[in-house]
Image 1 (spheres, helix red, strand yellow):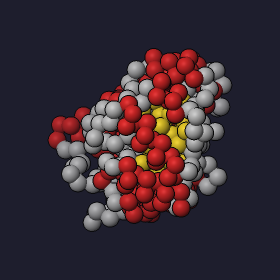
Image 2 (cartoon, one colour):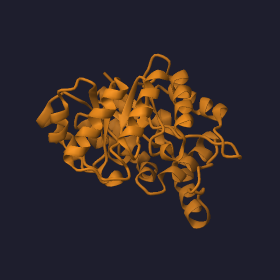
Image 3 (cartoon, rainbow, N blue to C red):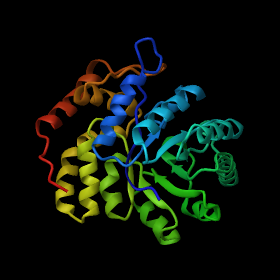
Image 4 (cartoon, rainbow, N blue to C red):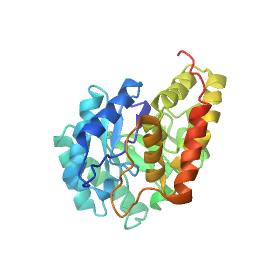
Length: 297
């Protein structure tokens, strides 16, 4: 159903802290013009938990305007199931093509609670669902056996696999075949996951480097692995910026340098400064200086 490179977009703010609709429209269109296959709004990178429900729906609508016939998904990441269901219902009314569900980021649910939570939100949305499995970031592991239990509900169509263990991708296929569309959610495991059978990439650094990200995916799809690997090896220092507590600030700084956007964030986050900022700037600028020529695909 879903496949390809689907950016987890950043949320852009004006100097007064309000949403910058015009800048998001520009940035989202850059993604789609580069060949991306959809957009995910208000995930971890999109600072979703720092936004009001009204703001999240506004970002979703901007994503849908950019994706047109391609999918625009809203991330559901609420502390309580009641609030998650309410947002899921609103996402459906706002035109979302699906939702990506994170188990409660506050209370770390057990197996029974996780499954009940996911089922309730899926029923409320009544849309295709991508399960976001991220035991590192959210300390709730949606395991292959849990995916098997959820498989009786056809609304669960995809998994964003972010366990940080490349073996998990194969474990899902071995247990469930092609029941779910498996996406990699860890930037610096993307080549490994895509060559292990993942059909897509919920990507982070793509927001600054969309053409390179799409090239890796398309070349792997064409089994041109050596060409994809050359780009991926160049990309790797940048992709590492996604695997950090500071992924939002780091990736937004990459956007400043590469696509002339801004790195404003929603408090309590602050933009990078000092040595940390200088280090990230150096990584990005060195990569730009030795950027590979992309092949035709």
